[in-house]
Image 1 (cartoon, rainbow, N blue to C red):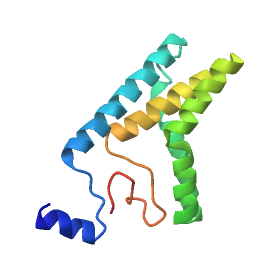
Image 2 (cartoon, one colour; image 1 turned 30 degrees about the vertical axis):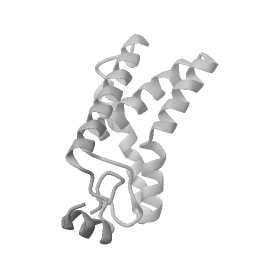
Image 3 (cartoon, helix red, strand yellow; image 1 turned 45 degrees about the vertical axis):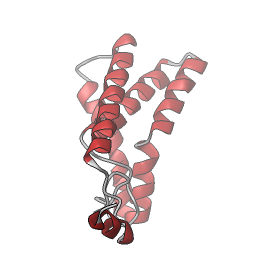
Image 4 (cartoon, rainbow, N blue to C red; image 1 turned 45 degrees about the horizontal axis):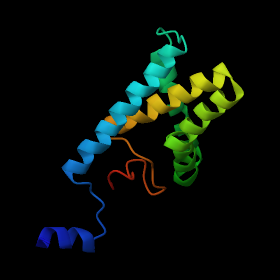
Length: 133
């Protein structure tokens, strides 16, 4: 272990090594593509795909109530659990609206991970599980 690594660990740094960051972004790209393929297979309107992909970011409105509420509402929408559960509920209930919503949520989270956005800590909007501010 190098002195720099030990210093970073002692300071509590959670910076992610470039090799891990590559895999996290590749995983995001795969989820984005998978979500868009599901959207397409469902017959989704491609004129709506950009607005729909941006819709989950409305969860950031919680930040108007402070960092704790904002990080909660943001993270509630920007994780794999909600997108996959929504997609699964759509399959189980044979509900197209839930299927579309799940596909978009999965694609959105994948898009965010691809560009390096992560789940938010309640300390700062830029303080994420992928990189501490």
